[in-house]
Image (tube, rainbow, N blue to C red; front, side, top):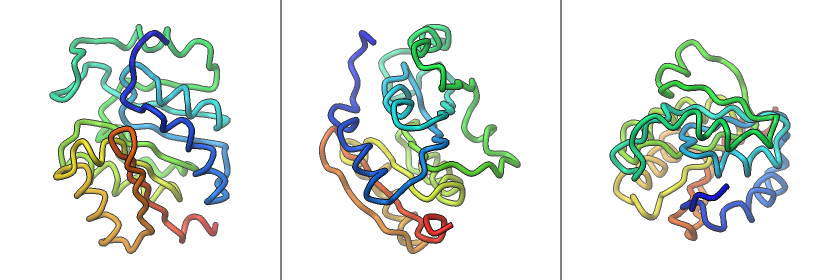
Length: 174
Protein backbone atom coordinates (compact mmCIF):
# COMPACT_ATOMS: atom_id res chain seq x y z
CA UNK A 1 0.00 0.00 0.00
CA UNK A 2 3.01 2.27 -0.02
CA UNK A 3 2.69 3.34 3.63
CA UNK A 4 4.77 1.96 6.49
CA UNK A 5 2.85 0.25 9.27
CA UNK A 6 3.58 -0.13 12.95
CA UNK A 7 1.75 -3.48 12.71
CA UNK A 8 5.08 -4.98 11.62
CA UNK A 9 4.91 -8.78 11.76
CA UNK A 10 1.46 -9.00 13.38
CA UNK A 11 -0.11 -10.17 10.08
CA UNK A 12 1.90 -13.37 10.47
CA UNK A 13 0.03 -14.35 13.66
CA UNK A 14 -3.58 -13.50 12.72
CA UNK A 15 -4.11 -16.96 11.26
CA UNK A 16 -2.60 -18.44 14.43
CA UNK A 17 -5.09 -16.51 16.57
CA UNK A 18 -7.99 -17.71 14.40
CA UNK A 19 -6.78 -21.32 14.60
CA UNK A 20 -5.83 -21.32 18.28
CA UNK A 21 -9.24 -20.05 19.40
CA UNK A 22 -11.21 -21.80 16.65
CA UNK A 23 -12.74 -18.50 15.58
CA UNK A 24 -15.41 -18.14 12.96
CA UNK A 25 -14.23 -15.87 10.17
CA UNK A 26 -17.47 -14.24 9.10
CA UNK A 27 -17.06 -10.71 10.54
CA UNK A 28 -14.27 -8.64 12.02
CA UNK A 29 -14.46 -5.10 13.36
CA UNK A 30 -11.67 -2.60 13.64
CA UNK A 31 -11.61 0.60 15.68
CA UNK A 32 -8.73 2.68 14.29
CA UNK A 33 -8.04 2.16 10.59
CA UNK A 34 -5.70 5.02 9.65
CA UNK A 35 -4.48 4.01 6.14
CA UNK A 36 -5.88 0.47 6.25
CA UNK A 37 -2.85 -1.77 6.66
CA UNK A 38 -4.36 -3.82 9.49
CA UNK A 39 -7.80 -3.62 7.88
CA UNK A 40 -6.55 -5.19 4.66
CA UNK A 41 -4.75 -7.88 6.67
CA UNK A 42 -7.97 -8.80 8.46
CA UNK A 43 -9.81 -8.79 5.12
CA UNK A 44 -7.54 -11.62 3.98
CA UNK A 45 -8.98 -13.84 6.75
CA UNK A 46 -12.53 -12.61 7.37
CA UNK A 47 -15.49 -12.61 4.98
CA UNK A 48 -16.43 -9.09 6.05
CA UNK A 49 -14.46 -6.36 7.82
CA UNK A 50 -15.86 -3.09 9.13
CA UNK A 51 -13.28 -0.40 9.78
CA UNK A 52 -14.34 2.51 11.99
CA UNK A 53 -12.22 5.65 12.19
CA UNK A 54 -12.53 9.42 12.09
CA UNK A 55 -9.82 9.40 9.38
CA UNK A 56 -8.43 12.64 10.83
CA UNK A 57 -5.50 11.35 12.86
CA UNK A 58 -5.01 11.93 16.56
CA UNK A 59 -2.39 13.10 19.05
CA UNK A 60 -0.27 9.99 18.44
CA UNK A 61 -0.31 9.83 14.63
CA UNK A 62 1.91 11.71 12.24
CA UNK A 63 -0.79 12.29 9.62
CA UNK A 64 -3.30 14.98 10.44
CA UNK A 65 -6.25 16.00 8.32
CA UNK A 66 -8.95 14.04 6.54
CA UNK A 67 -7.56 10.96 4.80
CA UNK A 68 -10.82 9.02 4.33
CA UNK A 69 -10.68 9.14 0.52
CA UNK A 70 -7.03 8.06 0.48
CA UNK A 71 -7.77 5.11 2.77
CA UNK A 72 -10.90 4.19 0.81
CA UNK A 73 -8.76 4.14 -2.34
CA UNK A 74 -6.17 1.97 -0.58
CA UNK A 75 -8.91 -0.55 0.24
CA UNK A 76 -10.29 -0.94 -3.30
CA UNK A 77 -8.66 -4.36 -3.86
CA UNK A 78 -10.60 -5.75 -0.87
CA UNK A 79 -14.30 -5.70 -1.70
CA UNK A 80 -15.13 -7.22 1.69
CA UNK A 81 -14.12 -4.06 3.59
CA UNK A 82 -16.63 -1.44 4.65
CA UNK A 83 -15.20 1.80 6.03
CA UNK A 84 -17.27 3.86 8.45
CA UNK A 85 -16.27 7.46 9.13
CA UNK A 86 -17.21 7.76 12.78
CA UNK A 87 -15.86 7.97 16.29
CA UNK A 88 -16.04 4.54 17.90
CA UNK A 89 -18.11 6.11 20.71
CA UNK A 90 -20.83 6.99 18.20
CA UNK A 91 -20.59 3.67 16.36
CA UNK A 92 -21.26 1.59 19.50
CA UNK A 93 -24.35 3.49 20.69
CA UNK A 94 -27.21 0.96 20.67
CA UNK A 95 -25.11 -1.38 18.51
CA UNK A 96 -25.65 -4.99 19.54
CA UNK A 97 -24.04 -6.57 16.46
CA UNK A 98 -21.74 -9.51 17.16
CA UNK A 99 -18.33 -10.03 15.53
CA UNK A 100 -15.79 -12.84 15.48
CA UNK A 101 -12.81 -10.59 16.22
CA UNK A 102 -12.24 -6.94 17.04
CA UNK A 103 -8.99 -5.03 16.61
CA UNK A 104 -8.54 -1.81 18.61
CA UNK A 105 -5.86 0.69 17.63
CA UNK A 106 -7.28 4.10 18.48
CA UNK A 107 -5.84 7.10 20.32
CA UNK A 108 -3.43 5.55 22.79
CA UNK A 109 -5.00 6.91 25.96
CA UNK A 110 -6.30 4.73 28.79
CA UNK A 111 -9.99 5.65 28.92
CA UNK A 112 -10.84 5.48 25.19
CA UNK A 113 -8.96 2.16 24.92
CA UNK A 114 -10.78 0.78 27.97
CA UNK A 115 -14.18 1.99 26.72
CA UNK A 116 -13.73 0.58 23.21
CA UNK A 117 -12.44 -2.66 24.70
CA UNK A 118 -15.28 -2.98 27.18
CA UNK A 119 -17.81 -2.81 24.35
CA UNK A 120 -15.76 -5.14 22.11
CA UNK A 121 -15.31 -7.93 24.66
CA UNK A 122 -19.09 -8.13 24.99
CA UNK A 123 -19.55 -8.36 21.20
CA UNK A 124 -16.82 -10.75 20.06
CA UNK A 125 -14.93 -13.68 21.57
CA UNK A 126 -11.45 -12.31 20.80
CA UNK A 127 -10.36 -8.69 20.98
CA UNK A 128 -6.86 -7.59 20.07
CA UNK A 129 -5.24 -4.29 21.05
CA UNK A 130 -2.22 -2.86 19.26
CA UNK A 131 0.56 -0.86 20.95
CA UNK A 132 0.45 -2.46 24.40
CA UNK A 133 4.25 -2.21 24.64
CA UNK A 134 4.77 1.20 23.08
CA UNK A 135 2.07 2.65 25.36
CA UNK A 136 2.34 0.37 28.42
CA UNK A 137 0.92 2.81 30.98
CA UNK A 138 -2.23 3.49 28.94
CA UNK A 139 -3.03 0.80 26.36
CA UNK A 140 -1.20 -1.95 28.25
CA UNK A 141 -2.86 -1.11 31.57
CA UNK A 142 -6.32 -0.79 29.96
CA UNK A 143 -5.98 -4.30 28.52
CA UNK A 144 -4.84 -5.72 31.86
CA UNK A 145 -7.66 -3.94 33.69
CA UNK A 146 -10.26 -5.31 31.26
CA UNK A 147 -8.88 -8.84 31.66
CA UNK A 148 -9.08 -8.59 35.45
CA UNK A 149 -12.48 -6.89 35.60
CA UNK A 150 -14.12 -9.41 33.27
CA UNK A 151 -12.05 -12.49 34.14
CA UNK A 152 -10.78 -12.90 30.58
CA UNK A 153 -7.85 -14.88 29.25
CA UNK A 154 -5.06 -12.41 28.49
CA UNK A 155 -2.17 -13.03 26.12
CA UNK A 156 0.67 -10.73 25.20
CA UNK A 157 2.50 -10.70 21.88
CA UNK A 158 5.54 -8.49 22.55
CA UNK A 159 6.69 -7.87 18.96
CA UNK A 160 5.71 -4.97 16.69
CA UNK A 161 4.91 -2.57 19.57
CA UNK A 162 2.87 -5.20 21.42
CA UNK A 163 -0.46 -6.88 20.85
CA UNK A 164 -2.76 -7.57 23.75
CA UNK A 165 -5.17 -10.43 23.16
CA UNK A 166 -8.29 -10.86 25.29
CA UNK A 167 -10.42 -13.97 25.02
CA UNK A 168 -14.00 -14.05 26.29
CA UNK A 169 -14.56 -17.80 26.72
CA UNK A 170 -18.29 -17.28 27.29
CA UNK A 171 -18.65 -15.89 23.77
CA UNK A 172 -16.13 -18.32 22.33
CA UNK A 173 -18.35 -21.25 23.31
CA UNK A 174 -21.44 -19.87 21.57
